[in-house]
Each structure stands twice: as C-alpha cells, then as structure tokens.
Length: 96
Image (cartoon, rainbow, N blue to C red; front, side):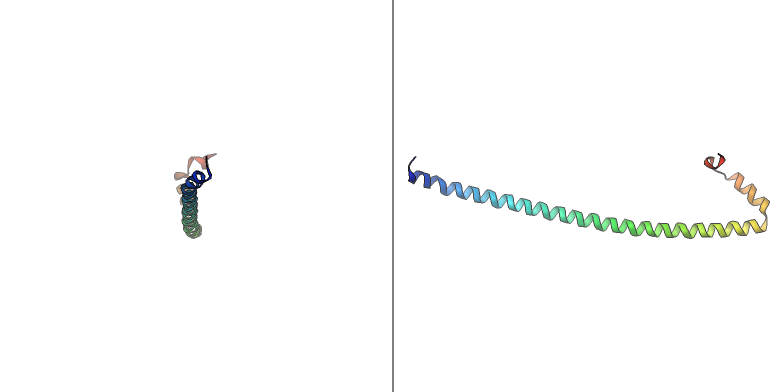
C-alpha cells in the first residue's frame, strides 16, 4: 500500500470515526438527560406521596382523637350499652 493510497483511505475513515464519536456522544448526552428527567419526576412523585401520607396521618390522628372523645361521651351516658356495643363489633383479632 502506497502512501497516497493510505491518505485516500484515511480521509473517509477519519470522517467515519468522527461521525461515530459524535453519534455516541449525542446518545450518551440524551441518555443522561432522560435519566435526569426521570429522576426529577420520581423525586416530585415521592414528594407528593410524602405530603399525602402526612395528610393521611393527620386525618387519622384527628379521627382517633374524635373517636376517643365519642367513647368518653358514650361511657359517661351508659357504660353497659357501650360494653354491649363493643362485644357486638369485636373483630376476630381482638378475641385472642
């Protein structure tokens, strides 16, 4: 292979290598961007779920407070009826 033939092949080869490098870099850049966007979306979703969970916990706490107050009121009115009500609505896990 002569020097002129080597140069004639090296031009297109260099162009092909450069194009491959550019395509690979673009692919990596786009992949990184997509993963970053996905991570941001998952973070936003986690934050929304955390807020929802806090709200649910606050509501549950309020319901438990209201329930305790209602039981106090019922007990003060007629403790025997409250005991009968509790026996009627007892869950299987409370039996043991």
